[in-house]
Image (cartoon, rainbow, N blue to C red; front, side, top):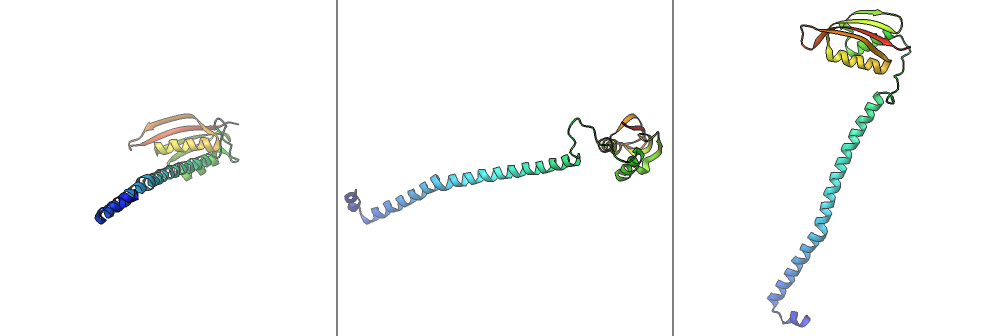
Length: 162
């Protein structure tokens, strides 16, 4: 092999060295650099997906915490105060207090409410939160459409189990 190499002219030797160097660099790129870069891209995509999952899990954790750790099928804990206090406090927080036209307690665990021109979506959401937070369920609900879109006049009877 050495004799053959030495029998080549100077120009052929340089061409052979340059081609060998180029072939070596190309092999280094194709067999080492490109697979490493592909693996890095795959790992970056996996990290991005994992971050998305972590974000979703944090949101789900916040929702679970908001539900106060209730296990499915368990009854919500009863508030220490009366139902009327729970209704007044939560209605004020939900911005529904001004829509309540009449609030008539029927003992400590039953109340009749009448609403005028209340946003239906807000009313339903509020009633759901009353059930979750105060164990107050709707025993009777009547609503009629009011002239304003999305608003109703409603009569609700709330009860809390003893």
